[in-house]
Image 1: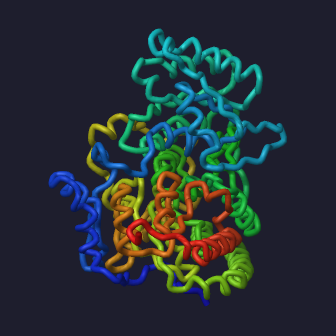
Image 2: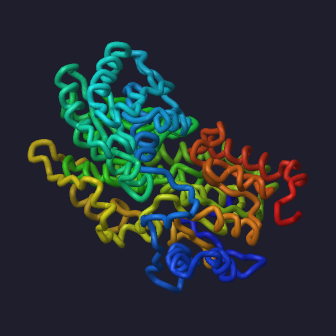
Image 3: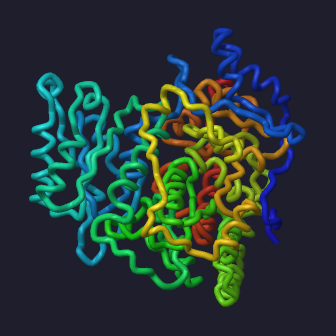
Length: 539
């Protein structure tokens, strides 16, 4: 028996030693009045009696406030583009930005038969002052040629950092010319860091580029791939997560055509339109791709989570329901029973040591939601959570779409996608697909708020000051966060688990991943070292 046996996780009412309303006031009290009013809109205490609780998100951070966000370039190159391992990624910009994206997320890649693997390389045009003055297009063209001559990659990407946009280097023309000259796909992404309020804009730019240039393009055919086929969208293979997910899917008899982008390959990406179902893991980073593929090719999508024992089982059952095949359903249930029993045998004794602990989570665009399931598997209650770069639909659900278009969202090209008259093909019975959509099974994401417990706190784009206030007042047993704030948190005597690159641990997805995570969290929370650390306010 696990802590939550219901099909849908609903977190319990939060209990604090202090009044959370006082905590929220304390978080914004040092700000000037105007800033405090702005920040207050980003802080919500869950009240289930209020239907359609709103939260402010995806707006510019007030200058001077230290937060945990990154730039559009990081979202494009670092998150979505970088994990394609057989593709050479060239950063057009100064070496500082280029170095920053080198292996920062621990994306893993297994070489295919051709042996090509460029995951560990950092390739940059290393723009200098003279390039800023006279332009860097010649240097970029030379870099693409040299990269091709040396590595013979299956494709090349070019990602731009801030100076490129400021001086106006035409990287799109370079990509087009080099595609014709070299005979391979060269795709350019105008993902200059300032393009959006956070890395979220970079995700959108990356999806647009791949959809226009790769999906259904290149050497791809339209010949149907037999069997139960899916794409994994928004799974980036951090610490080997994709390997564990695919292990279980293959055991069930489900074939993964393409992954965007963890352990991804160029060839697989061109065939992605042939999958029968898209499984969307990180809604924020890749819902664009899912929507465009359905509109143009007819591939439906459903939101899943592979983080947590019960969440993974629930997602597998969603796949079974979509395909509506008796033999597949039976096989999936057998795999779930076998895998859950094995995972539970290892997690149960660990849960006894973690039961009743508390966590707060400030991670990415879906991870702060997904990891609540896994913490619940371990008996740990999440008392506060929020995203770095989410939009309102990530909190409130897709029913709030479309959101208001502002100056920042206009910076990102909005593709006009239409049904392909020849290649559009429904992958399931139309009446069945419509029924699933009406039930909210397809094309739906309820967001984080609906599953948060009463009185739990949700804070969007949290600042360092606000996080420190939370730690001091709520005294969590662990914080799940990113590298920017990890060591700040641990100086407060609270263990921090990095959930962007896993602190060199993992995989944490899937059934065996949950066991790995349980051991890791047990080691952190119950490490006697923390008893020797004195928080600054205790001195």
